[in-house]
Length: 114
Length: 106
Image (cartoon, rainbow over all chains, first blue to last red; front, side, top):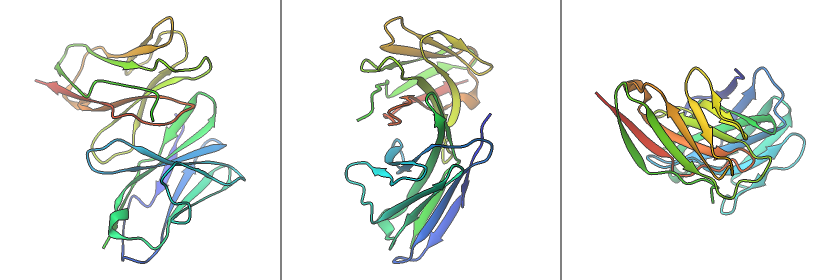
């Protein structure tokens, strides 16, 4: 099946710094990528949807200047958490889609802000 | 809000079939139903998907009602390793509901 690679799997950063998370589709071209955040014992919350070459569409309540999403190619999307604070500590997951009817998930990135 | 609703939790005896229901009454004609499961601290694992017809693969079967307003995921012989949170999502929507926490008991 299709593979989506997410990197890093774990990251610890200091409060006030920025962290970049990469999401790559390894064997297909992802026209659309989705970014989620998941807090302990909760479901995945959709943060934003990005289409290659265009600006991301953010869900209500998600700060676009805080969570910068870039989808510059058909195989790579990045999520940058800017000026991270402890409340940004969470499990971040990406999903990639090549079109209608298919979506594949990365293994997630656990971010801890200290 | 997610387009799907599922029971919060279910138990199943090891070796028996687990039937997990999902309601998606507002699904539109070209939207697929996908099922994933998530084991603690991992990304969602794909299980199966369908549009109109029932589907079966090595992991599970998916039964979709004729009106497409609901579906049921069937794990034919549940094992302890099937304990997880199971999510059904409508792929165009890509929003997750709370999912069903399935506990398989010995």
